[in-house]
Length: 301
Ligand SMILES: Nc1nc2c(ncn2[C@@H]2O[C@H](COP(=O)(O)OP(=O)(O)OP(=O)(O)O)[C@@H](O)[C@H]2O)c(=O)[nH]1
Ligand SMILES: [Mg+2]
Image (cartoon, rainbow, N blue to C red; front, side):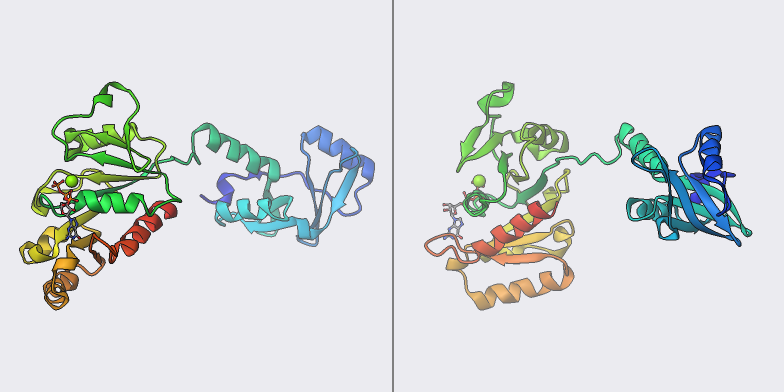
């Protein structure tokens, strides 16, 4: 929006030598709280009521000079800083003003319309992969490594909805609330499950077992493919187009060189995709990197 769209046109202005009594009379007559002082084709100050009711003359440093075509947002910024008033200049004459009170009124109108509300929407991360790939294990490992993030779980890899479906408290896994619901494999079901975990910052969804081809996005913020190292050969790059991260599990049983070779074409085709090779077990190799990635996703929101 341009400043001419929000300014009050044809402002009352005064000369520098205007008598003080005239200032008060003009303000009352025009029902304004600011009188710009104009001299030699420029604004050199502004009269405004002081804290004690007397009128004070503020210097030019408190006046933001603008053109009608200027971006209104820049004027708002000036009014939030040092400027008491913005005077819009057009063809050598004052054409309009925007005051701090105007800025506050605009802000109030925006708030009344709900503008500025921050939705406390959680970050939803969906884990998809074949049966036994290590999805649940990854989820548990993440839960134990995210002390700063309020994390919850949606278990769509369950055969029946959990007993709390009717509205009771969800059961807990490592302190995190868990909603079990096979319907969360679909968009509407996931949305319902997420609704019930409203206070969470991060929601980890274990999707039902399946290939990635069967896993189009259903409203999550990030999709994670989970694949055991020994089965990487089954993955096709085309199936990874919606995937932000690939977790390669069972690295403790795998040959690093073979895994690197299998990953090469996938990395080449999916440039932005993170890859986390992990091993569940005694040293949980690679799991910290996976948890840090999740933490960054959740905290950045
Ligand atoms: N050796 C080894 N075993 C693992 C690893 N990750 C998971 N497992 C084991 O693999 C089995 C399946 O792991 P889950 O985490 O249950 O896998 P899932 O994908 O959730 O499996 P479903 O939900 O049953 O489809 C469990 O016995 C895990 O202990 C790993 O990195 N290395
Ligand atoms: Mg599981």
